[in-house]
Image (tube, protein in one colour):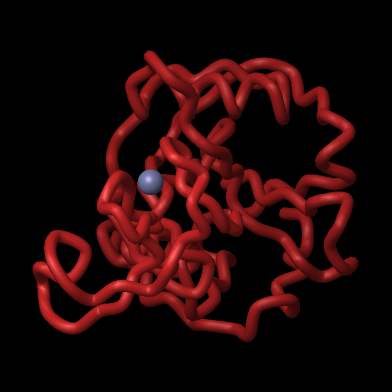
Length: 180
Ligand SMILES: [Zn+2]
């Protein structure tokens, strides 16, 4: 999001490296010239779910993506919910599945999008009903997963290693996992 004016006094924001805005060195930040407000631009937490249904991992293709882009279920947290509640809510909204057991895989950088990924392994049950956001899902055996070298791909790789599976990485957008 782009900010141009101070939310308190409406003065045009300026790049500052002094005072609080620059307390950790010479990093320039957009701030009010009178010191009311600093645009910290902190990374946003994103929840990701590696969803297991009857021993297989669910990968989903977003409506906005190409035919070979399959990934984990992701979404932003909402106010007043724990990350575990948030990941269960996203799973329900996007796939209709019910989260049974939720276990943290790890926390991963996604600096390119200024996000922080909190990744969970979610054992789920129920009938798959996709939201309009998703167009296709695949259920893949864990040993056939092919992670990508970014964000949620590293979470998938760590989950595989924890099960004694050596991940074989593919470029993002070439996963197109076969069923079974
Ligand atoms: Zn101001």
